[in-house]
Image (cartoon, rainbow, N blue to C red; front, side, top):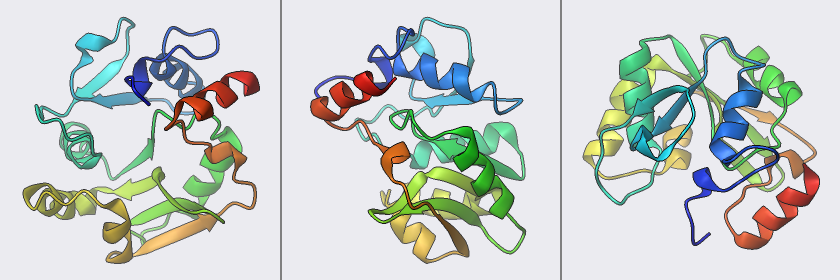
Length: 174
């Protein structure tokens, strides 16, 4: 992207992060923002700093920090750069969660969406191993655990803002 996606302006908000935070607060009682440092944000929210000072921007450290801080049975995760995942998608994923699965994640015809799903606290050890081995591939983790994939026919909601042209397109859709 050439810039920190989390800090890009979006809709009527100063940042994409603030946009996501406010819309998810309408869905969930508790919303936490996983980040390396909260110092870059200028709005009030519940932040979970991962404590990693590396230049690796992988979700592994965020999962570890979230599980350790929250000590909850499951967490729902959504990457900051998917602003069109709506309530219906989230509810469908949450409805598919059961004790039989370690994770429930979205899937489209383009593939799995590992940063849109529910993960069980029982995976704490697996995430620690991934971190210790510098292996940050969520797809590999999902293949090796009990994962349920929830298929979504329409993939537009999963538009991921990785490139400037995707960001520009997203700005026309809000």
